Image (tube, rainbow, N blue to C red):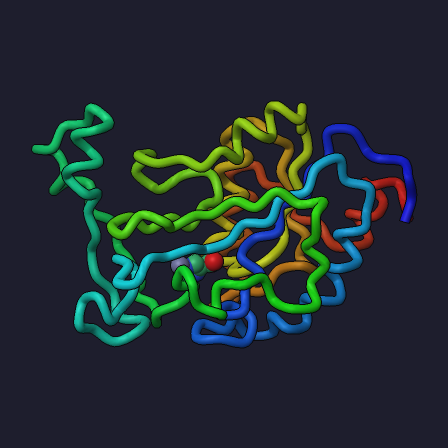
Length: 231
Ligand code: VGL
Ligand code: ZN
């Protein structure tokens, strides 16, 4: 560890929770992330954030809520009351459906599965961002939901800390890491996903092409250390 901090460099650890590592929606290979992410945590970031998927029981993304099987697909719509509250056109709701993979129940508020995986050094240096807290809205990104009806305070906090460079690790690479990195790049941050700190639900790596196409940099741990001036 070093005392020197890299100004403007922030670490975002996405959803390294019991259910995604060893629990109901375990991402293949996620236990192997503890060591590299713990090493990354101690790099001289000026700001550190960990996100937690945080669903009420009966969440819209759960297969059980729809009487379907995990990994079935459905279409979900933004809740009418939220659209109304945010001044949107309720008549247009039916055109705003999104394809949704239905998941096993996971990261339910008040259950052990929601906790950050034991052994990961997410400590007092971190701010915590909760997402997916609205019963009727799926939210992969740690910034906002896909309809932009609800947002977390992540973007404001990054601006307030004068963050320029955002480094993203965690799970799942093809869902919440991807959505968060793309939103970070769209918000104007220099955004990098560190592959040694990421595992995905699916194989093939198509998510990295999608992230690159929106300006997200894909780097490995060696390159991260160089950028953080500890290599
Ligand atoms: C996630 C599926 C459902 C994620 C969250 O953290 O990538 N994936 N909810
Ligand atoms: Zn979820």
